Length: 346
Ligand code: PHE
Image (cartoon, rainbow, N blue to C red):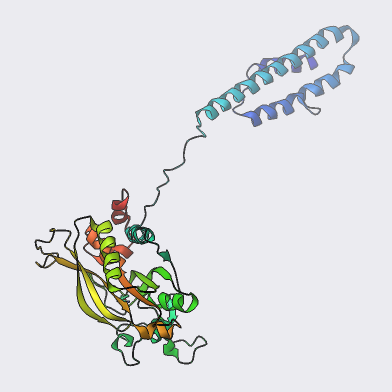
């Protein structure tokens, strides 16, 4: 009986198969563990009559050896299969292509403006976008009834945030508010650029948006003249649009500067000959500027008899349009990667 069992197991051994390490281990447990089938046969061995012990003993040992070597063989096989699979994995490969973003054209141009003015000593100052009336208008010589404070231009914030009147809180409509903050907190000489986002209540179209970006500049020192203003702006225009660029200053009005001017550059699309972009004039307007009104200096605690200064302000979108011919202002805030990718090389 025992002999038959041994022999039928011996016949099975060479047929054993396993697909993975777990199956190999299951075979080992089934046959060779303490409760395994072969171990059970060994336990029966003591009941074998003496005269058969030699023969059965040999068979049992043969069975155990063959099972062990078959299981080892299977173990090696599954391990080598596993390492073959692993060797096909390239763990150094980058996963799915990581698409890198590009710099936004407005950021590129803002940085370029800052870079140009930093070469003549301007540093950057920043301030809050949610402002109060005093810093945006009051200290900048806006008369209380000035139309720029009108609801049409300014976004007033209804909610009272610890201020006297709800209408005192607003979204800044220009970054000149940062200039008033700098003038009240620093002593001249002052040479700052104020970049940032501004808000105006305008209908959104290809040519206007309810927010845009500005870089304004302020220089206050002893004996600052209009000639200094003109020279600084000419330098900027040539650096930004090329050495052949010409500028012209047209008289204008801002409450906070006197005299005030609007500056045009020679149209960089037609070279000043006249085209549809410059409406045949050869000139395009790019910024407002002027000498800081003495009232503003005094309101900010600066002695207007000792100091004078100039200020200017430009729209970053406008400069970007001129540089890169972006026809529709809305593209800047739509986050369309097809548009943004075009500035990859800039
Ligand atoms: N603050 C003005 C505007 O937003 C621009 C400006 C700045 C004009 C400084 C003159 C001097 O339109």
